[in-house]
Length: 498
Ligand SMILES: *Cc1c(COP(=O)(O)O)cnc(C)c1O
Image 1 (cartoon, rainbow, N blue to C red):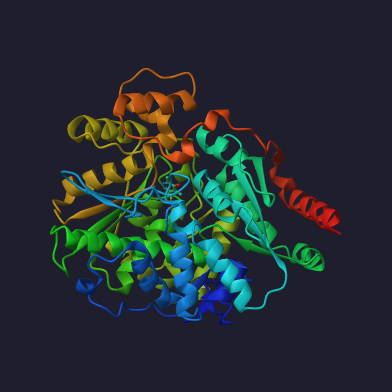
Image 2: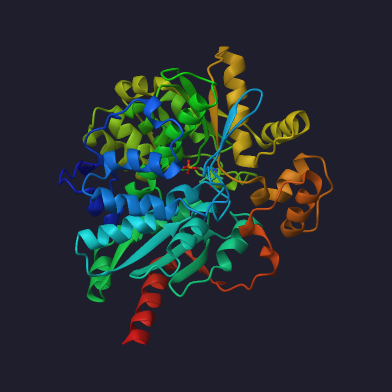
């Protein structure tokens, strides 16, 4: 298996090289040159543990990893760090199956990939005999940052930098990040939104002079964002795992079609579902759910991507994104690997904020349904599900559930549907409390306690006592200062070592 850039650089890379680099030199994203087809029947996966499924899926993509290396990665990642041995349990409700992806340390689905990425990166560095220290730059809309910090904290040979939008994350998300321990962790608020943070990180990646100066100090940049193929590949596994759980519980038989509904921001999670479909998972419709920042819903329905619009801060902050990075990979696959068209679209996006895709791509998107739910709708869905079935979902999952309900009403499609449940309700406790019609506590930390009292559902370990933890990372920087701050920190580290 080899990887090339979406934008035309045809130099093929091994997976380890693509994982170390993160972003391709021509600013494109690494994509697999062929889509592996799953070699085995689903019946043969019945009852398998999560790490086993992850191993079987990932080995198709990471063919340069020895089986034993990959086993160490999957076994090391998916262990007692998760608060259930199922790792990603599937919960049946009346109308949908919720795939709970939030049982890791940070209570959001980013743990599914970021608990394994440090292993993949460490083995990649060893395999490629990379002797420089890896500097991981991460832009976050709230959840990636903490999951990346947890994953990489004190991993030798790495330094990790996280940039989050100063007013664009919840109080809980912020507190999780600014209290992070680990000598190699660096966290900054930036004055801007997530798109600014992501653009800033990409700009650093594309600055050759910067990379040269860093190399002189024995550092090399990599990424923990879903632009890194090492983030995306582990995410494919849980869709297979959901399907196997459906078979094992007698809800479907092998070969039956399912739908998958995903609360979408940077398009990583739903792209992993698309990859699963391409590998042979019987998926009928991929439901791409947006909040008020409905740029993807409009794109899927029109073929015109237009980021020139009002940016809304919503109760699902991890989806408050207007430039969805991973869409570029989907377009490349659907265009028939036409990197010329992708380069054109991405240049237009950078210069005008807008592009229109070819009919070929538009036709290829027919397996996607794009919809959106505003806050009122999503909040009503949380309340209805809790009052009707005592099942609690968070504000992001509520968007996916709500859009799925619309889809079902509109199309009459009764295919069993898996809703990706991307965060614990506790992570957005103050919003969820309001949705349930309970009085609003003074702050988000009190809301965690109030939600536990109201529902009796245990608080995830990582969120307990958060309000009392010591703040370690308090810096706020301008967008224009991101590169400088990275360089200063690294030079200071270097100086303190020498
Ligand atoms: C990151 C995130 C999303 C969006 O996922 P993408 O892969 O960026 O589309 C949705 N919900 C939660 C809770 C998240 O943390």
